[in-house]
Length: 414
Image (cartoon, rainbow, N blue to C red; front, side, top):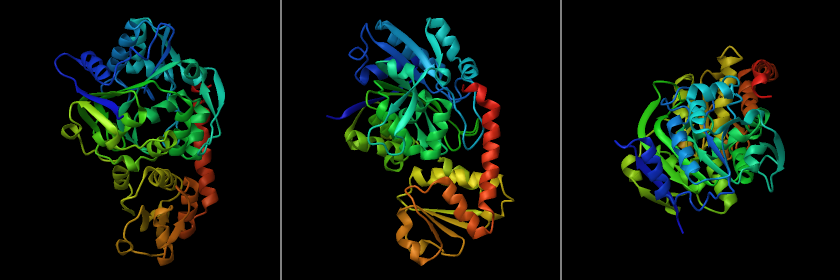
């Protein structure tokens, strides 16, 4: 049987009415929430930002979901989040400040609901069975002790994962150090590992005002005016990905998690109810498209099989080289992603083939970097070798800058 995902437009009756309709069309919460339920409501409040800008979950959606949950009379309701810990760009953020600026704190106060900072929650180390990259992961006990988790992501693009929806949003239940570990080990696979041990009961997606590209305000704002809902994370994220105009096959954390669940992340497996997906589909600019404009000296050639695994690691590598060298290492560099035709590639000593997909072209020239995906530091080292740059010094400089940023914000995470 296909999993239902609803798409509902916000009309003159307002946001709460749209949220209620979306939840009902997708099967509702009455069979999920009982008088004994301990409910965690998990919005995306990754940094301090006012509502309505598309970077964090709109507090009006969080309020609507919380009211609906309260009406079902559960034993307890907590709104919880742990804000971003920083990795490639910028440091950590105060969760309390994010709650305040986003309006989430006001929602909790109005509704008499506890607001909990999951970055400073008690944690439990959980073993991941048959992991991709994380055999153990430290998760906030609030998430583990909640028998119902309502996931409320905001639909938007992401610098490393291409998109961020329900699966990516669960990183908020990790401690700050664990958030960083997911990047170091490989973000897509780590997200799949995390979601295999955190059980989400229902998803409501804020697709009111969202972000594309690199998510810069206000130029990357897109007004959709939609609410999505569903009980199955794979189905919801598949529909959300298609709504942005991207192919779910390119979203590797979605594919890895679906594979682990024994299902397919494909529209053929989903029943879309409410509004038409085709009539509301957009063509979002990706973070990679935006990023390439900032690196005109680098030619990035993408084949059809290009996925988030390789380009996420590439973006981190390019950012580090740009920031911690004179930049000459990137001049006239060609990077090949996915499986373009060999005739499309101009092979020189400054051509880099990334990962498994273009491996068959390795004997035609250039430098092939193994891995699926190759890790950020391996990409940095390969580019430095062909550019005559000291890779160890560059990586050490990046690590020192990263450590300084983390030390300056340690108090926000411990």
